[in-house]
Image 1 (tube, one colour):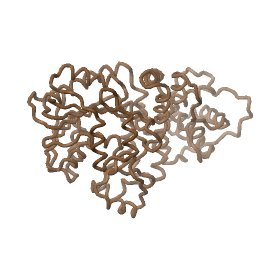
Image 2: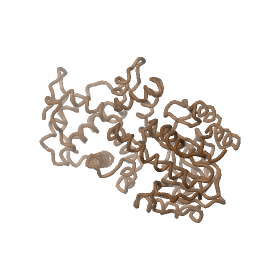
Image 3: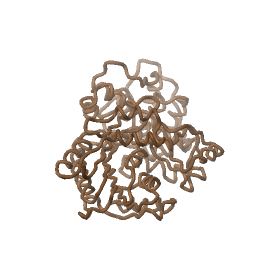
Image 4: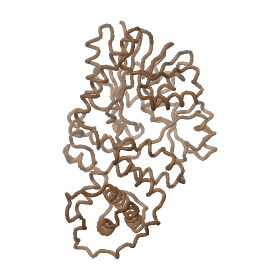
Length: 471
């Protein structure tokens, strides 16, 4: 395949060296290729041994490259097609990924020299055994290097389809958001989905702040929870506090869910892996017995290891179990049903979701989510918290409404009441209290739309409903 001609005078061709591939670009290329062949997800692969062995600078660049390609893939494809003689012809995965990495660096990232980008992209193609395509990659990237940097700002007056194209989101998904939440909220969601997410941690004690500062970690207060911190700079995974389990990396909205669950003596976490919410349930209920269910054997094993390495190991029992098949015996006074979902509230953190999600998936998720919630209500004696990291009504309010209609004796209570209690306890920041109070729906549930809570309260998207038994 050849590059389309250009009216501009091309610069001198780059002569790449197959051996001159930086570790960050090499690992980013390998990860994207593994994802292409269905061998893993970005979050797992970026935490793998190969990436961990890189220098901090290379780790950061590798993450930026992988996540950037996943966020902007449709736009990258469109830019590449402009300079192909046969725009609709099939391109081998290795060649396409090398082009994606090249265009991202040339037009979407700053401070990366064009000559290094082009040279190493060509070297990646050659190292993958596609020497025949090296000339095409070289020519396409040299022409793209002459274009101005991509403007990521959103002009006013965009339609749903224009918004989807501008932000590399599926049109059908953006159209739903516009219909459900309005164009302004949809813009905020899409804009948030194209930004690197904040990194947040949970502290075990206030004095850990000083310890982390002494190890080169710069923190600022949490945007939602006073026990959380946001990481400004530094790698917390290299600290003794992280290695000993005294801090945990966990998004603030995710931390909020078990905080809202409240108190119990016998607690069930229906779908517990990876375990962050389970540990918070144990932390907030030191006299309770927490049972953690997980249906996946591999995730259950990882959960068991994480619990065993925490100071809450004696309080938590991990079991391999299907949350849809719980015995119909009221046993637990507090149940958390944080169910598997589409994850559309986390597209900034998990951008690959947008490339594989289909409308039919929402129906499939809905059926399983209803089964889990029905099961949770069967074994619950007091309070059940239902939550997702989805923005889709089929997975959220529709699940709660359907199951409550089938289960007499249970009703929803306003999440705002519990938020008020957390605020009184000093666990909720003032900014979050004000922002979240506006996100409550008429049925009392809470739908957090990413990017809509204000500049000071950035979080992924979540849905939370609190159900109570009896009057």
